[in-house]
Image 1: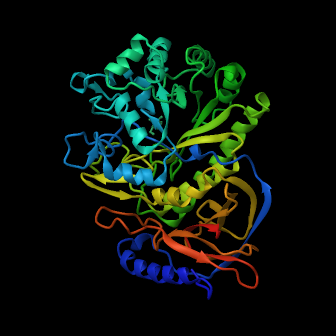
Image 2: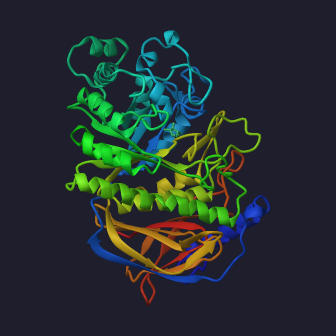
Image 3: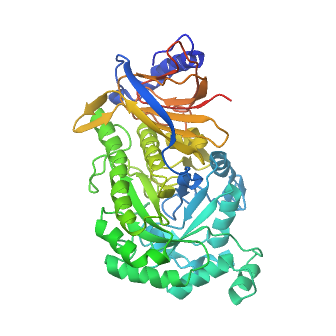
Length: 522
Ligand code: AHR
């Protein structure tokens, strides 16, 4: 980080970083990196749009009945001592409201492939407990449709209902939709009213199956496409109908869905997880990694762009008008559990590296708005790349949360063509551009710029040629695996950032391992 004469906030941030480094370095000595020379880079922003506006739903999230994702993390029950509104914890909901979560996907994932919606309605005391087939333990069904829809309303979010195409009949699926959204009088809408909800809810998206190539039924693409059409037939004139798509780099599946199911779907999906090793048998740890793992993880995250590009090319052959969208309805990091962890399934820490994965992924989504109109990071609380971690009554915001917070101005903005020229860096077998960028024009005419310095050692100075003052925030830390703990929840948090143009225009200073998001001043 090199503070300039005109950059007072960065000076303060610099001092804060030093202080932070003094506090944090002893804790994370294994992954701390030495100071190095500042590197020059250039950002060129073009006035023309790089695609349609960024749909705010690109900032969606995923909440599955898994580990401590729902129970404990979000839901504590109305009788809990932890402050709650009708069972949903106030602290977590408030933090998520602050983010402006546009849409939540529920109830799974693989959980959805075995879920019977009837288990989750009616008198909570009479709801059956079921074994959670995929993630272990018992599912009490205390949280069902009414409770989840209440959460969505408390968050002000739209919903993606993930329907079970593996073990629920088309009739049961269409009944669930009628129960939720039916307006007139019918046995199902009357039952909803008896269960406490008069007004129909809005279901914006309905997922027809999940990972049909795996936990959703191990289907052949051809069989899945036929089945999709059957189920979709009974969900017409309602929500956007979403076909379960790729998660195994299977081009044939996309081809078959586009050939056989085009009239019966509004979108198909991609699941893309970032494993530091790229190997499901030994995924790698969330903390305590080296610079090679840092670089490889970010490279794998960035590779989602290759997959999206390939899928788009197949979709384009069948749908030149781009009517059908590509929803990345599961994405994020997936690590091995911490040794000796007693936390719920798929609980993992979240570090500055996760923040980088979030930033580069969102940048990719901004570059493909012609098809990518909704995504759901996996997952919301206590599971995989979570926004929030909880421990009994305590909670913390993760570095990923902070990236979503920093990136808020991008929601609904129009992406602009932007090029970065500058050096690359190499660690192990991964070579990456040092600086990543995304630029967009907001509805009120401001320019929002996100810059990430992926290099674990070298600061960067990015010349922009822009003339105005910019302000926003920077997220950085002294260690690659800096993270927040329940005792130190502010170890990594954004700091204010402001820069004024010098004689050569606006220059943005990026500390090593930092994400800066700024907008032009009004
Ligand atoms: O997000 C965890 C799991 O990952 C989901 O249940 C499944 O759809 C995917 O394999």
